[in-house]
Length: 336
Length: 287
Image (cartoon, rainbow over all chains, first blue to last red; front, side, top):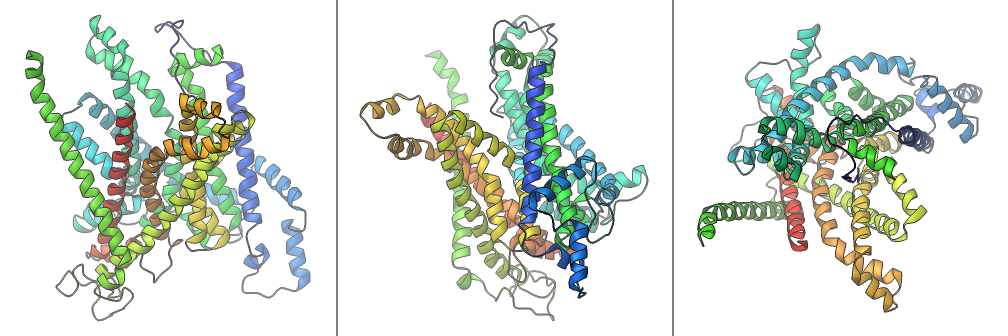
């Protein structure tokens, strides 16, 4: 994120264990809290501005008396001023209370909790696929510069980046489920192997765009590092090429690669709305789509907050972990 | 002399590769022109009415009458594909135009003013950046209902930080160039220098970024229509065509879903190739 690595001559490259600077940690965590606070305000006020009265969604199809409407409004706290309502909503959320679903008449936390396992399984499977194929492809492309294998990977990246998950899903479904009959077309399966079997096609469909992204970032980070002088110096000192690639090139390249993990995590969660719908999975994504269709605002608010929080928390975690991987960052930070 | 001889085969291979890449970019540009013409002249190009239902001829395989077959209610897939180019291209165009204008103005303003203004704008951009474009679009659908207008504006906001950050970093570099100081010495106003001269110098790079963004905006809007939140039936749109075709896929007649899916991928690849080529040209010119 616009981070400039300043290589200072003072830091020894080996045997330097970076400790996390407390001021740096406090600044990052402060940024996290501010971002989440502003986000919560945006999410709350955007739905406050929504045309239409929440009461009409709850009393849909019935004609309540004015007294009933007033009672519901009071029960929901709708008769309070905006800032009071926002404060109540925020403090309740901090206690883990996200309100009640209009449609399902259950606590939002329970509704989301019931859908979370499928989504977690899907996202973890996708993350593994993205990690293995994306990092592998990027490293391979960087080490095979100018050869046909690099060309093939780059063509794959160009097409993969343009392949939305619903297109990938329809191609996979039509080839592997309908034509070949290797995989089921519907549902999330039971048991460990049943789940993996059912979630393979959805996970692959979800992964393709992100594999392209990770491959491209990995390749360019590796190419940048391979060009650096320290690589040549290490090689000339007789260190085996394999060791130099692993310990000097890949380790340095890992920093820039890690900075996109927040983007990938949030993107995966949003894209489950497409994959869930397509493969009939009961995850967060299909819950989001249903809640939007049924004007179930508390659930939409909670899922939006969840996804933004994942993005911000992962990004902050990467920022905090960065100096541990690359001691030059903490040197640059403390030199400021 | 000998080094030139040794280098010759390597260089010829590189030029051949470059020529191949150049041909690819030309092909991508041609593809884009074809799709734009298709959208503009859909009324004359489409062999059938895109919404004409023919229940006696559903899920027909390709034939001389229906080159790409028909969908599950007997509508001509080719005609829907041609008409679908309209909605599928206008949405991303609006997103990219709004995002480019907003992003350029905020980025330029932040970099030119610097200080507290810059810090505040950058922090605000970071917060917008935390919302994935598709999530923001889904959120406004929850608020304002289905359709294209509100999601297009929401997505434009979500794309603004990308352009704004780019413009900000470019303008910060430009500010230190001697020509800016020269204009100042000559007494030109900051407004003139920023909007007439600096903007002109950074605009090619912004154009490259916007071209690539167009492809991503197309993907996001197609995903929105696929979910049933964007373009509403029966209007033809590539994203909703893929969604409608799911039943056809399960019945072994995937063409009505695969054809628009291929159109999406081809157009996005073409936009990315053209955008990257513009970017490469600018990088080459600066060197």
